[in-house]
Image (cartoon, rainbow, N blue to C red; front, side, top):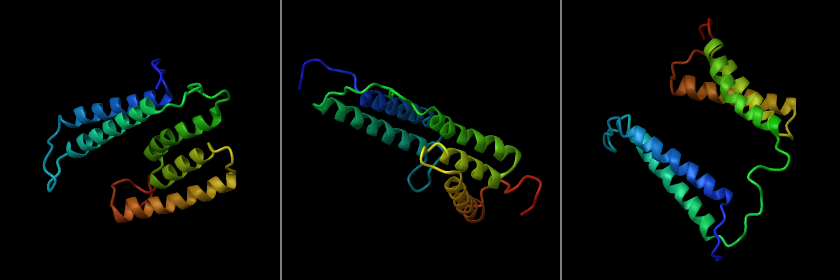
Length: 157
């Protein structure tokens, strides 16, 4: 291993995961923890935060132990801005469309727009994927888990 340490992308990824994990664990520690048999509201954030921080440490450690140089840039030469925009717009659409339209249009809009972020996706394949995930999501979240989120605003289904 060389004496000169270079900052690889994995250091950034591991550090960000550690930061998010510690933040989630610290935030969750402000709630009642409970026990394994009767979990409180702080149990999952604390446990998942610790696991996330541990995985971040593992990622950074593998970057440190790797002898391969990281010659790649932090961002690619030709970023796919349209794909990034579609993937980031998906959850935003879910929130906005879900608030005004309900679960069915929210899931459909989120999946359809996010699927268009793939450069090999077509409108037809994105439509089929969005329809499939919408049916699965409605069955799971509305009928199986009974999440109190109307299927369509203004319509009783």
